[in-house]
Amino acid sequence: MQTEPRKLSMFQVLACGAAIVTLSMGIRHGFGLWLQPITQEMGWTRQSFALALAIQNLSWGVMGIFAGMVADRFGAFRVLVGGALLYALGLAGMALSPSTTLFALTAGVLIGAAQAGTTYAVIYGVLGRQIAPERRSWAMGVAAAAGSFGQFLMVPVEGFLITRLGWQDALLALALMVLLVVPLAFGLREPGFKGTAPVRRAQTVGQALAEAFRYPSFLLLTAGYFVCGFQVVFIGVHMPSYLKDHGLSPQVASYALALIGLFNVFGTYIAGTLGQRMPKRNILAFIYFARAVVIGIFLLAPLTPASVYIFSAVMGALWLSTVPPTNATIAQIFGVQHLSMLGGFVFFSHQLGSFMGVWLGGYLYDRTGSYDTVWILAIVLGVVAGLINLPVKEHAIQRTAPLPA
Image (cartoon, rainbow, N blue to C red; front, side):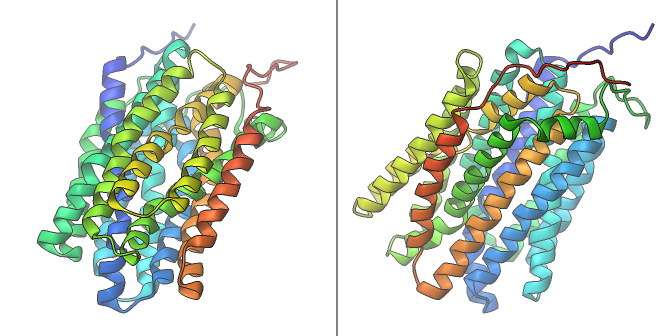
């Protein structure tokens, strides 16, 4: 009789997972700071920069599905190491690309694939397998809060590096920094994944996918996540330029992004904790409705440093707070055997939204000289996402017959 493999300690999983997410998410949150330095020096349009980051988000979404499959089958360690190496290569390529095509391949395709292997889908798969269900939503909130702290920590660091080293050397410095993910990945080597032999599953990949895509609540969660990606990536990438266009200093943008990260630490932790105590669909609906209201007030109020900081703090509390309840709901409905893969599919929708948000921001700005249309669209989508999350059913799916191994 095969014994159940021992679990990693909760402290080890959370410490290593949170540190990896802090680094990988922290770096990506600062990419908007490079928009104007790169486009001005290279003579590129904002649309060309935005398109590369849109491709990055799309690459992240597509590769996240496969990274999740590999992590579920062979363990997260190999995926994390490969992702770290790709991240370093992509950042170096981003610094040295002489054309928009190579920039799109490095800043877009490579870094997107790297993020797929070093962020939430892979880390949450480990958390789901290694942490008991009664603490799972809380643990996911801790990991998401770490990603938020990464934004608070890394965005000012990236702004400082750009100022002191120039934008190219700053990217090369980040390429070295992201390699710290490799030693941290050793702390997430799960005992159940020995050598290259896959863990035996009671449900195949095809069965898991067929079950999920036939289940309406999975599709509703997936649609809601599209809106999350649209809103946060548009704001994260284009708000620094939006503020500068309205006469505010670059320091205001750096502080604004840092405030988003700081308050997101609290927002994601609270969302994960509340997910243990109340229906997660209500948490998600509230977040999306609140985002729509906050963006609307921001557009109507006079634009000053104070209003920017207030907007950033409130929006920060809502920023990635969708992540813990969404992933915890997937685990609650379908179990944890294919959690990274199913989370990857939902996150793919998030990245489609990210693609549209960041690309539309650049495209419409180049043609109209304004971001107003995209801001309004972000409000409308927030209301829609709030409505479609209300009917989600969170209880474990009832399988009428045992599935073959």
